Length: 288
Ligand code: PAF
Image (cartoon, rainbow, N blue to C red; front, side):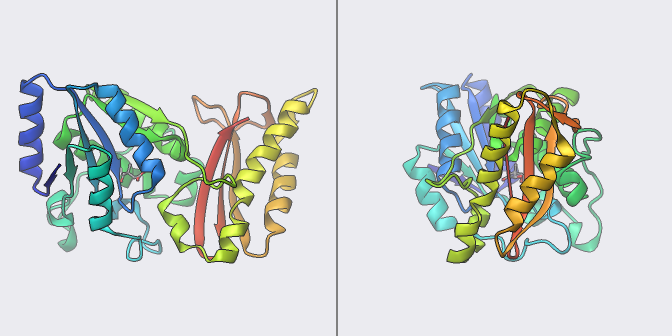
């Protein structure tokens, strides 16, 4: 396994692979890898076949964090990440620096961003107004550097995956986006690098996101008519906030393709939620 830091070296390697007609699979990450990331690597490997190559990027992208968010304390452990990538059969780990990715940004001299203007308005976009501009910008840059034929994203970040799909279509990136299922702990908590922030008590309470998704699905599937979103939201909020450290940021019911909020919820719609557990903000989503 090779570790590449330089942008030029990454792009040169990618173009060489393309010239050799090798299929490039790509898994962008912010590191602190867990089983969820490794499942994306396995999915990428499956997509590219035996003659293909898999690239994982590890880059904590500063532009997707708001000024009050957890950029400085975001968990990092590169040696462990490299070991996990080696074990998973990754061909190249790409670890660019901030200076290389955003030249001049420290002195206010970086000025080009990629913005998706529809799907990024609600949910995460409403709570974190500059988040998706950072995500689409870094992912577009990574696509240009890694030149993948297929890129794999996790369904846990459903809105992110939808926005990246849209960006890929709108900007004509010649690649296929694959969205892989969410990996969960035994009690249902979605795997996330941010779970590391939770104290043991908070970790127990954090299962409330998954429980809310399951309960909503049960209600919607059993109801003889579409369910009123406002009433359902109130009920789920009460259940979640019965946990001492859990506070709902948002609960949304939406169309899985357009992400449009739905006032009357039916099977086939999707639910997403963001919940603060102590000082940790967790997200999750599922089909209803
Ligand atoms: O999902 C993530 O880990 C990040 O948002 C991504 C896609 C790697 C961009 O920084």
